Structures are given as structure tokens and as C-alpha cells.
Image (cartoon, rainbow, N blue to C red):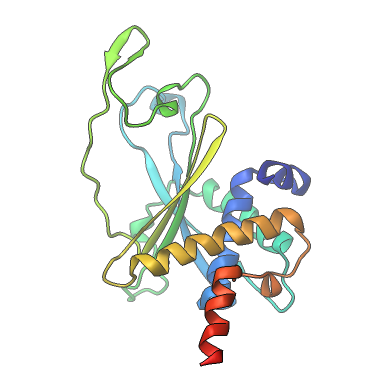
Length: 221
């Protein structure tokens, strides 16, 4: 459904995921003018094609939500902001500052898309045992990750016809129940966007039957 919604809007599927993610932050109180970081590949030239390493830089994407903003508005702004940011992806994110003397980062939340390209088959496998690739026997090795660059990081992984969303977060700021609720609201807004891209972001329902029952129980006391 996301692919069909993206095709109808003339954007990539990630444009939909990004636009709805920004709509989610807006609904959670981030305000009408917000920015998130999007890690993108900077492996753009032939000289870098065979270079081994993670060549990724973060670009800021900014979206403004006015009264009556629709999911289509959010997706369109997100897609345009992503295209503009990707065109300037070579500038180091660490050097970007909102002011000449400010040390505040441009954004504290990030979202990225991970999916295989071309004949890449390694991404189709999970954390299973040894596998055969291009005539070589290989196995996945867990590598410690440097966490903590952002308060919340969302990763959308599209592999072998499936889509999974993973949220990483600062445990000093959020508890697991809060982040699970955030994730549930994200999938609910994705559903609302695909059902009606012209629907208003502000009026899309976030609470499910369980949430409503809990809220009504509070009032009944």
C-alpha cells in the first residue's frame, strides 16, 4: 500500500515513510516546524564504487505543518526536502549548526531506509548461520554499534517483500512502553495516509480500542 501511495504521489516509498514519520512527531508535540536527520549514501562517483567502507552522511530534512495540513502535504514536503538535502550530501553533518556560535545540533531524531540494491543477496538473510555468497563461505559477525547520536533513531528495512521498523532510543529520556506506543502510532498513521492521502494530519486517529478503553476507564473513576 505504501508503494501504491508513493506511485500516485510521484515520490519514492521512503518519501511516504519520511512524511508520515514527520507527521507523527508533529502529532506528538514537536510543533509546526521540525527537522529530522536522514542518513544517505555519499558513494556517488565511479572512483568510490569499489571502496570498502560505510560512506554515509546525515542530511537534515525540514517540514512545516500549517493548519489543515494533509498527509499529501507532509509527504510532498518530505520528498522535496530529501531531494534537496541529498544533492548537498557531501557537506559534513557535524559542521552544520543553526547559529555561528551555537553548539545545538540541527536535529535530535533520525530516520533511514535500508534495502538491498541490484544483485545484493546478503541483505536477504537474517542473523543465521554460514551462507554462500559469490563462491565464498561467509558468516555474519556482530559488530558493536556506536549509539547515542540521536534521541530516537528509526530504521525502516525492506527485504524480500517484507517491511520492518526498528526504533532505537535514549533510555535516559524514554521508557520502552513510550517507544512502543510511538511505534504503534506510526503504523496507524501510515495506514491512515495510505487510506486517504488527502486526510488531515491533525484529525487522524492515534488511539486504538485498547487506548480508548484505558482513557475511558480513567474518566469513569
